[in-house]
Length: 491
Image 1: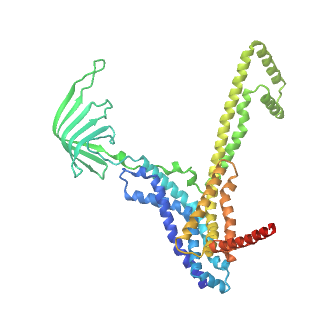
Image 2: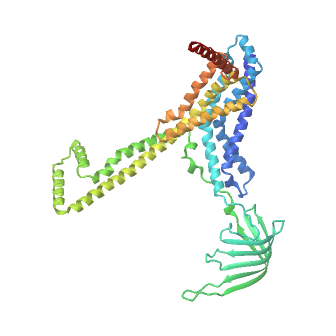
Image 3: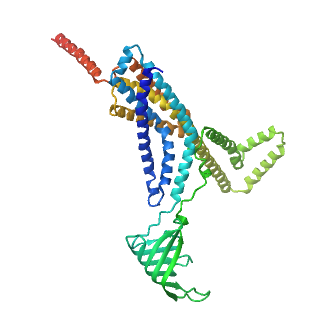
């Protein structure tokens, strides 16, 4: 490897690692903020958060890799141009294409690794992340008994504490309603003071109550009038134990989530697409079977043709139908015949509408799985496309740092995002084939990258204001003489 290649690679990897880390952090924060409400007040451990952050980071890396490649290549070649290193290379007879070659090979390796990562690692990370997120959502909020308010988080009990001391353990004026008998507020415990603490690794909660009274309504015998008698018992010290197992986070079987598209690799997605294609064809083939019983003539003729092809005798069947129709014609009134026809038409319409909705939903589901399959390829190829845009642009603008490169990167990323989202929406709605919708953004930006590469190779100044100022001055100079000549001719 030549020194120039080492120089270019060393100049690239520093900004690339930095930008990739920053982008992963930004997108990670944005994604976690969507689920912030799910985490609040549930007393989750830091390990749970760390695990969720790790899984989401794996999901985000292939998504931000093209943008990191674009920004890093812009910074790299902008710095080389700003410090006149590209000029020195060109003056030594080294073309821009030769300078780009080692980095291009590295970016191709990035694309291959990105596809492998997106196909093998990301589905497993998504499965772990969203199954863990589901468990977090199902977890009850952490035990938080507040002063002056009833707390109903413990099953079958409602607890109110009028005053909590700063230690969080000592209580004053405690009221506990026992609903375990499912007979309303029939059992009430009042205590002057108490203590609250957990034990057995937080699986149980203990209430030690002092100087209290327990009220218990006596049960009413069957057939007797409702009783309003209470059994009152005083106590100096009483202890109640509550299970907190319902507050623990349970682990859900991950196989329940495996059918989601983002948790499937290319092989599994191909199987899903084939299955949905067969389902669509089956729906199309079975429509005739569902609507033929409601027809007396049109669909009957089709049935007769099918039977004839199979060698079945249908002469007697035709006579039977004719006899039925003749009998019906004379026995039924005209209004009844119209009503029967209307009912048959309504039934046909209902069947056709329902089958059409199923057919459309099947096609949409197939498109969704096909979109996810193509996304694994397009994200990988986007790394190469973004390099073809970023490297020549950096050589043209000759500005390093984080100013101009960030602005240009954001502009092209927004263009890429809008084109991708538009193509994906069109593909999902079957407005265009899935391949066209998913690869359209890469196809368009590929030619944009080749255009910038050609301009950079020819030392173009398309992004310099001086060039456009020169063209404007020429336009003004060419316009003024013409105006003078026209005035002389008029004179």
